[in-house]
Each structure stands twice: as C-alpha cells, then as structure tokens.
Length: 446
Image 1: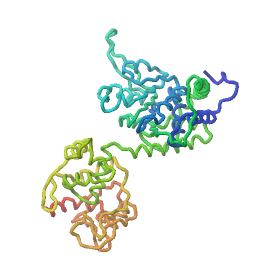
Image 2: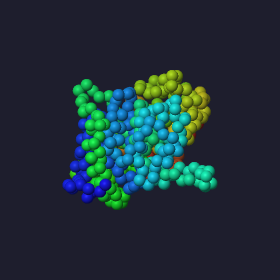
Image 3: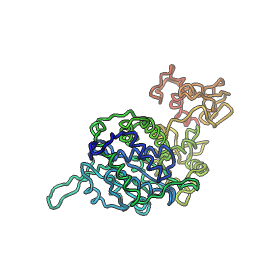
Image 4: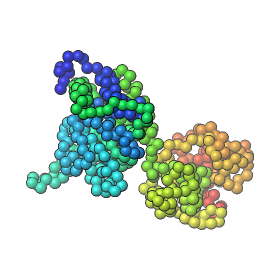
C-alpha cells in the first residue's frame, strides 16, 4: 500500500478527522480528549517501525456494558495488523512479533490480570511491560539448536478490562476510562459485515499516508508538554499529530496534558498513603503509630478504615512504607515513648513522590502557634496558620511572625534542606531552623 494507489492526495489532518468521526459514530467516550487520543494512538500503530516506545492503550471501566468491546471492534478494523485475543501465552506472543510488529489487542484483560488470575500470568505481564521499549527481547533456550533465542517483544498494545490494570501497565499507557452510555446518548450500531469494509478502506489510506512518512516520523522530536514516562507514552501520538498538521498538534497536546493529569490523580496505594500521611501529620514532627492509624481511619473517602474487609493496621503501615525507605522508631511525645514515625524520615518520600504542598492555605492553628512550635509563646500569623504567600522561603521566613512564633535555630548556621536556598542569614529560613532544631525539640520534650 502506497500513495500512488490512490487517485486523490492524502491529507493527514483530514484522515485523522475521518478516523475520529468513525469513533464518534460507534462509541461514546468520556471526553473530546479521549476521542483525540484514541484516534492518534490508532494512527500511530501504522508507524511502529518509527517508534522507540510502543505506547499501550488501557481501556478500563467500572462495570460491564460501558463500550469497551465496541471500542476494540473499531480499533481492530482501523489499526495496523491486529492480533486480537482474550488470552495468549508468552510463547505465542513473542513468536507473533517481528520487525514490523502487529498491534496486540487484549480484550477481557481483567480475566488475565485480575486478583484471582494475576499470579498465573506474571510472564505475560513482564512481556507486555518489556515490549513498551525497543530492544528488550525475550530470551529463551532453543533446545534443538542448543543456543539462546532472542525473541522481540516490541509491539503496540491495547488492553481492555473491568477495573484497573496492573500499575506497571498503566504507567506505560494512555488510559481511557469508559463509562456506561447515558439514555440521551446515541451511537450507530456496529455490524462487522456492513461497517468493516468502509473502515478497512479508511485504514488503507491511513497506512499509505503514514508509511510515506516513516523517515520523518523516525527522526521526529516533537516538543512535549510532559516529561519522563508520560513523554515516552505520548511522543508517537504527538509526532503523528505534528505530521498531520491542521489543529491536530494543539489538540494532541491538550489531550496529553488532560489525560496525563487524570492518570496522575489515580495514584497507587503507596502514594495515596504518603499523601494521607502528610495530611495526618500536619505540622507535627512525630506521631505515635496508634495515633496515625486512628487518624487514617477517619479520613473521608480513604480506603484505610476498610482495607480488604478490615481496618488498616500497624503491620500494613510498616509494609507499605518499607519500599520508600521509611521505618518506625521509638518516639517520645508528652513523656510517652511508643513506636511511631518522624517527619524527617517521611520528608524524602514526600518530596520525591508527591507534588509540592501548597503553602498559604494551612488549617492547623489559629492562635499564632503551631504543633511544630508547641510551647513557644507569641502571636505571629505566618506559614503555620494559613496566611503564607505560597513561596517556599518567604513563607518559611514569615512563620516567625510578629510575635516570634517561628523557631530560630538554637545556634550556628547549619545546612538548609532546600538545595536552592540562598537566604542570608541561613537561620532566617524555616526549613533550616526546623532541621537544626528537630533533635533539640525531641531532647527537650523528653
């Protein structure tokens, strides 16, 4: 299939518009950005030899009859060389992939990666994860040739299922969260015999247009609105949009930022725990484990009060914090020493896995003092009382307040925990003061 097979010029933007209209005709998606993302992903499957990363398309829904299978039907008729299955063995998968790989379409993924079946499909999950990046082969021993066989794994894949997919797959995916069609929403019924021929003709025109631009797509370095893994996932889609032109470059970047932002809100349980611990701690420097658990159980819309049918307990807390390098220790509060956790041990995990906390909107304290400054008289109105400016260091400085409610360090200049801190004197910075006085505070409390 090439450009010369068609009597009329092929325009990328028009082809993408036509493909998008096909999805609109047969499927209800949750947003305009979802339609744009699915359109670009489907088009990108025709250029797999150009990509360094094979983006996954994760199609999830909370219940059945949300349109997942219908979306997979339309993708099947318009993507490059579909390999559709509800289950596939690792051996069959790697032997189906070559230098111009098929598009793997795994429907009913919840039956493969659900809680009851996941342990039986770890090899398949590993292959799907490895196939996200070029040059990650599956190595097996060929008994006949008595030598290792390197099987390619690189291929774009769409996976549809009820509930969430494994975190490692969703991290490599553009995620489309389906919902059941409302009574007022109407779509055209899809019948393969009737509707597939027109979709195949559209698919062939997209193939001809894309394959005529493989060199340009291989060399493409589009400006990305996101970074790291999200940029890897979206680069093929945005490269196709830039090559198509029209309003697609802007639409692609809007879809990228919107859907990436939604995915980041759906964090793993570990990151959710870190965020809730930061809320529970407030301004406290240390908390007993029992107090932490009691506070976690009281958080609205949090899973901790009903954690797999029981209350989240101390062992669960320790187990989930261990991968982040956080462990419990003896802490003495108001003369009582019990097992608990300290802010200084959680600070690194908070800074690495959570977005910066918005200063200036605190709720802990209204009298000019806060828990971190317990026992220090004054009537300041700074950072701890919710009247900061939102600037890290200015709020740290303002926490001293007019009445001295901030902590000056007990002596010396010390080293600030904020790498870019340029405050002089360094003792004026609250972060410096906190870190310099922490041990002094616990020693005094003891």
